[in-house]
Image 1 (cartoon, rainbow, N blue to C red):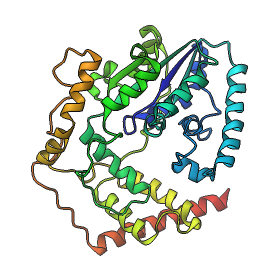
Image 2 (cartoon, one colour):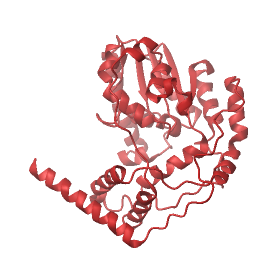
Image 3 (cartoon, rainbow, N blue to C red):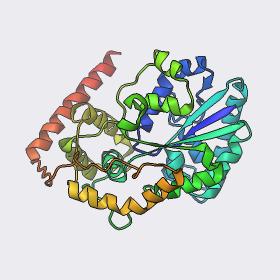
Amino acid sequence: MKCVLHIGTEKSGTTSIQSFLQKNRGIFSDNDCYIPIAPAISSRNFNHRKLATAMLDMDHVDDARKALEIQDADSFNTWRNVFLDQLSEEINNNNTYKNYIFSSEHLSSRLVSIDEITRLKVYLQRFFDTIEVVLYIRRQDKYAVSLYSTALKAGSVHEFTFNYRNPVNGRFDYHMMYSKWSEVFGKNYIDVRIFERDKFYKKDLTLDFLKAVGFHENVINGTQWLMPAKANPSLNALGQSYLRYYNAINPKGLDPRLHKQRRHLIEFLERNYGGNGYLPTQSEASEWYGFFEKVNNKLLLELGNSTEQLFDTSFDSYPKEKDHFIYTSKDLLNVSKEFSEYLTDINKLNQSR
C-alpha cells in the first residue's frame, strides 16, 4: 500500500483540502483510496491532528496535549497507546486499498525534531510500502498576514505586526522544514508545491492536490467531485477589530461557559464580516519578505528548480499607503447588537427542535 502524507503547511488551504476529503470520502473509496477516521479531530473535521499529537516527544507539550489534558508522561503514554491501537486496527481492517491519505498541517508545524518525524515514519512503515509527503508552501509575508485572523479567532488581542525580532523561525523557514523531512523520508519522496493559484493544476487547489496524490487526469476531470463551502474565511477590518475587543473583555479559556458563545461569534463574523482585513503596505511586506531570500534560494537549489525565484514577487495586493481603520464605540456597539440578534435567532431555532 502507498501512503500520501499531506503535512501542510498551515494557511495553505489545508482546511479546504480536509473538507474536500471528508465530503468525497466515498468517491475516494470507489477509486481505491482510503481516508482514515481514527486520526481525525471529529467526523466533521478531517484534520488528522491526532496523528501529529501521537508522534510528539514526551517533553513537547503543545496546545493539543493541553486541550486533551495529557501533559504528564503517564497520561500521554496511555492516550498515545490507545489511539495508535485504534488507528492500527482501522488500517488493518482496510488493508485492501492501494492508497491511503493522511492530512494535517500540524504534522509540519508540531513535529519539529528529527526524532518526532522519524517516529512517524517508523509507525507508518509497519503498514505501507511507500510513503510520499506532500508539502504546500506559501510566500512568507502572505502566510503571516493570513495567520492574523486565525490568531484573533484563537483569542489574540494584538494588532497585526510582522515579527521582526525572529522572522526566520521554524514556521517560516521552509528550507529547514524541507531538510528535516527529506532527511527522514528521502528527497525523492517529498513533493514541494507552491501555494499560488497560477501554479495549481487548472488553477484549482483541490484538483492540484488530486494531481499530487497521483490520480490520473481522466479521474480528476471525469469525476463529479463534491466541492465544499469556502473554509476558514478571513475577517474584514471591522470584524478583526470587534474580535480583538471581544477577546480583551472575554479572554479565551478564562470562563469555559463562554466557549459556545465564542464559536457562535466566529461563525457570525465569518458570515457577516468576512473579507480583506488589515494589510501592511507594499514596502512593509516587501521588506519583511526580504528576510527569507537566503533560505528560499537554498530551498530552490535543493529542489533543482530551474526558475529564478521560489515565489511570485509581486506586492500589488498590498496598499501603497498605510490603512488607518479607526472604528468608534458606536461601530462596535452595532456589531454587538447584530450578534445579540444572531444569538437570539439561534436560541429560538434550538427551542423549536
